[in-house]
Amino acid sequence: MAFSPRLRLDTFVFPKPRPALYILAMGLIFAAAIATFLASLVGTRLVLGWLRHRDILDHPNHRSSHDVPTPKGGGIAVIGALAATWTLLGPPCAGLMAGLALALAALSWVDDLRELGPLVRLLIQIAAVTAALVLWPDRLPVFGGLLPPVVDMVLAVILWVWFVNLFNFMDGVDGIAGTETVVIGLGLVLVTGLSGINGINALFGATLASAALGFLIWNWHPAKIFLGDVGSVPLGFLLGFVLLKIASEGQWAAALILPAYYLADATITLVHRGLRGEAVWRAHKKHFYQQAHQGGLSHARVSAAVGVAGAGLIVCAAVAASGLPGFGLAGGVAVTTGLFFWLAARR
Image (cartoon, rainbow, N blue to C red; front, top):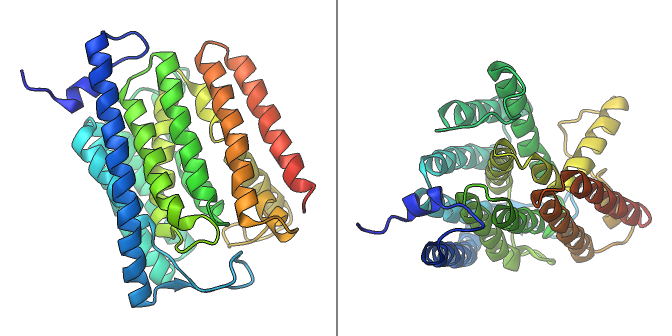
């Protein structure tokens, strides 16, 4: 029978497969990661030239952290590379998520150019997330069957939409969004290998990390190009999908640990601004990492600090996936708190 990457990976379970199957699956994952990296790297360079030619630039203002007009729209290449890989090699749910991510990218591109209103953006995101959850083949309850199906669905929509938005909110200095994506992607690969959940998650993680790495070469400080909403919104959507997916497969602790810093910074800042009566949907410079940058920390040092803390969170997620979720969560809290203190001391 002919080899089918989709069948093999979707039924492949770590950590004790047959040796031949293990080599076959790991080879496919590695090849997919390399192809996605090259597509993102080359695609971003091509998009960069086109954006410069069309003069599609993000101009500095009082809420931005850059000093010179910079092309925005690098997410076109990143999401395109991911959508192609997931559709070609993934199971039906991967094609579904890729299609919805492309739809979000198209609408977010309009937002990049014309600025859709916040309510319109929110309704579009709710519609995309709801469609994903309703059409997701073989979807498992996110909360392990502890809640009625309708409640499980509603809470999953809220969490997913919030993650899409917080990922967009946190993309405020060069390299930070790409670094966070690499952290979550590599963490997903490790959690998959240690926990015995569906092997397709390793493909998702490896391609997310490699697409982000290809983009980071152009986005590391001083950034030559930004993701734009066309990148940060659908990328947040895809990351939210993989995190909810591993949570539904029993790795809820790892799903909380890997994005812990992003979750904490965005949520604490939102609550603080809401209590002060501010319009929480408007762009600002009040996240912990932004204040550290304003205090003199360079873009590169902020993003590097997020990456170093992210490496610690990957270790904590691995501990949780190995059967010690309590220890993993405690470690995740400690790492995230340490990063907060480090950033706060430089504000």
